[in-house]
Length: 317
Length: 262
Ligand SMILES: Cc1cc2nc3c(=O)[nH]c(=O)nc-3n(C[C@H](O)[C@H](O)[C@H](O)COP(=O)(O)OP(=O)(O)OC[C@H]3O[C@@H](n4cnc5c(N)ncnc54)[C@H](O)[C@@H]3O)c2cc1C
Image 1 (cartoon, rainbow over the protein chains, first blue to last red):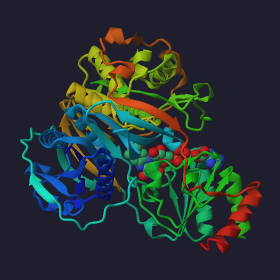
Image 2 (image 1 turned 60 degrees about the horizontal axis):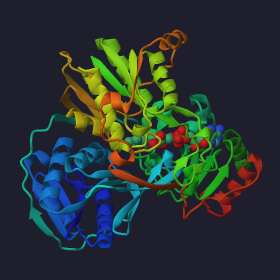
Image 3 (image 1 turned 45 degrees about the horizontal axis):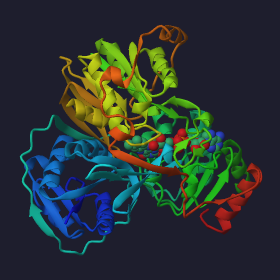
């Protein structure tokens, strides 16, 4: 039977949550196609493969000293080897920093069409139809591949995590890896700073809609002070230097889960939402009624944040 | 250093979006602009050129109006450009477009670096740079937030951003394809003299036939588009009505007494 294959993701030997989400996705897609779910683990030893086998019935382990850390050249070679050896129809990859780095290359290596950044897949008439975000989350589209095999990358959180508990098989697949053209020198932490917004109970976050540094300070910082919380920002605000990187919420910033998260002038791009969707109560203030942030907010005000926030300050007394 | 920058035109996301027949957005309602991430790529190329010499070539695929974004990059300081203008390419998927861009890059010859944005805000695919690299057999790196070119101008050290505030520092030889992440620099604004000069800079127009592209349109694509629609969310925020003052008052009241979070 053909296989739907999850490519496991790890950093420092720790599996990513996205891998466990894709185990769920693989089972669902496989059952619709009459295929079987499986995973491939590329690592320096077989410890991780055994761990992944508790989430999915069949695991292929590519073990090589070169695979301790992620590398695009090695991963695309390893994907190709497993796909060719093991009757794989579909390859599922997290739409993460590493996933985005090699998924396109792996797709070309196996001659498959790729649909990236998906949030859902359904099997219709024997074909997998993928749903994905476009236009910064304002519009969804559906696509499929025309090739025999497919590669798809999935947004974080698209599927629930699979729970451990099974006892799948682990089979070794051998690959002779051609040397990578990239050499990792080191991994460094780039976000210095003493604030730790991840501990705050109340977070007031401002986005590009706050327009400029002084105005950001005026509305966002002041409201945060008034509520005894921390101020935070979306990435463009940090890129522009209106506040420091330690206050960035999202995929490349902090993950937060306060009791109250106010998102003002933030559109709700997936990379931002990834860092704050666990907040208990989310307030969105945005002048665009179609901003995707309203799809995850508890309360929304459609309006100009420069009118709404001062009015909130007044109402707070 | 010969650097090619891939630039894409995307809708301004604050435009009013309308979908025509489940299949495309109504472009008559849309303001277009250069993809934000590509502006960082143009700036990165210009900074490398200022340090090391050489030339910066802008390459864009799209309809006639794309000239505007190419000229904007010229006004920032790029030297010349290629505009791939062919509906048969635009109707294709990322694979078709990447194939055409590769032919255009090859036509430049002797390219050391290809830079592009990490993703385009319209299709959000994050595929083009990686495809181009693989098709040209160049090494690539995505999500680049720092570039250093070695003394002999043959090797690079780059920082690749990772999740949660980490960077991976990588070494590789050129030629290479790098996709540039926001925050790497502050893109410059075109100056008035820059804008004047931009009008006279060389812009080569290429059709699929000029480039010898064989994978075209729907037929050459590896993916099939089904439909597009506005998201239907199971969850919608409770939208608080009224003018700013009234809405703010109601919100504060709800946060205190309903959600009990302040
Ligand atoms: C790999 C990768 C990692 C990323 N990591 C992160 C991350 O960690 N964190 C992050 O935030 N982003 C991240 N991004 C960027 C992300 O994709 C978005 O570009 C970003 O989140 C958008 O920020 P924004 O909502 O502030 O700006 P925009 O998307 O420009 O939205 C501004 C919003 O403000 C509204 N607005 C404007 N004026 C007003 C006003 N006067 N009153 C009310 N509303 C107004 C507009 O309607 C709009 O909705 C990442 C992107 C990539 C590709």
